[in-house]
Length: 301
Image (cartoon, one colour):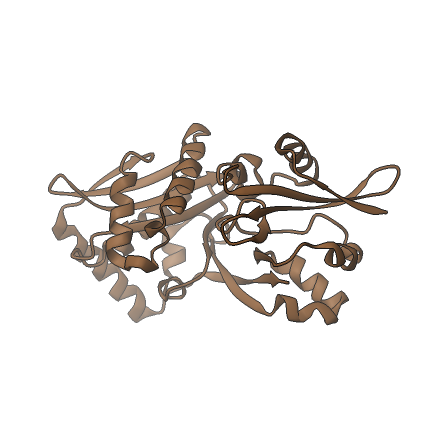
């Protein structure tokens, strides 16, 4: 068997669609391609084959700006898998370009490699968690979900929702009409720490959201108070998964963030989704919502 490298974007697309079942939104070629910029990234698909057929693929791109290799699609898409049998990992590892970073590797995928090859565990030492709400187990009933909160927590949460009523919020479901306002809220709140302080990230996210809009998968909740946009939370639906992607709001209005999340959960329930995916990482609020979590790995070499 030998490993070759494919860099032609059309051939990469064929390999992607051939080897990856389109189970989640991150599996879609349209998703990862929306983050692709030929001026900044060069496809680097490692293809392992024998004389008869392809045995496995590792889809990467080279980021010219930082001179590193990443999974094709960059840093935002999640739930990464290796597209080959675990027994082939050492062979791929030997031929990987360096430096290479693969974020948010699926728990099962990472654990299988570590269990079979403990000598590679040090390359998977960075971990995080994906947070999600399994609304299927609550029979799509918001009250059954709220019943998982302890008595004090549930009372405080419902009181917070009542307090929001004083703002007389206007809830509007739309696409990406107020994207610029959304970006400004994020930058104002987090400053240079906001991903949206990077013009390239803003460009790529706009491209991603445009793809979601074209595919009729985007669900953005905009909150207006006195006719002014004060909060935005963007989500997407694919198959039975509802993804809460990003949100920002005017912090002068207390509990507005909670309202945005709560309304999205209700939206997911109304659509019959099985799971609400709140993505990887937590700044403190996700655990307060009694969300389940599963580990994910970062691979570095």
